[in-house]
Length: 202
Image 1 (cartoon, rainbow, N blue to C red):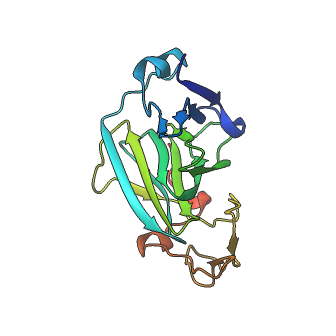
Image 2 (cartoon, rainbow, N blue to C red):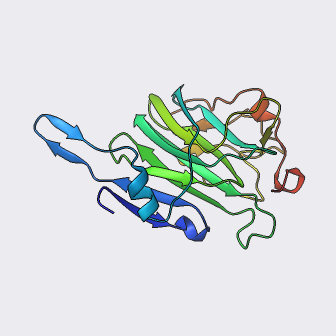
């Protein structure tokens, strides 16, 4: 395994992987392989990807927590500009870590990648002025198959960094802001998701 190191079962949750590529840098800049199927397979990661996505978001945007119900997606995520706090929540029925979460800061500097297998809800909070976020998926996007989980469900208790506010019984962004005063920014749909006890199980 030449170009990556892999931390498996990150946070003690089976299937989550933090992947660090080898970065070759000098005075001119740097080079790295962002994906190598052979290295992944040598690390025991044999998933196949069918779609690449990219998004750009402003500071304070929180996207999530999302999943597809009938066509679940594994996702290999990374940040190419800025910084986000990326979160996965285990929704697999029968899992020893059902309802548990793990989060990691992904930045353009640390170049870490995070693999979230099928059966998880996923989301991220933008910590920098702007963040560009890239991810590979193991299944296609299926309109109408979307599911979601309240980003602030106290039963899960995700510790979003720099975020200030008190839970008011819903996923509304009202009253929440980052430490520098930037208002939390969620889509209308993401403010309507229910908590864990009322959420789809895989």
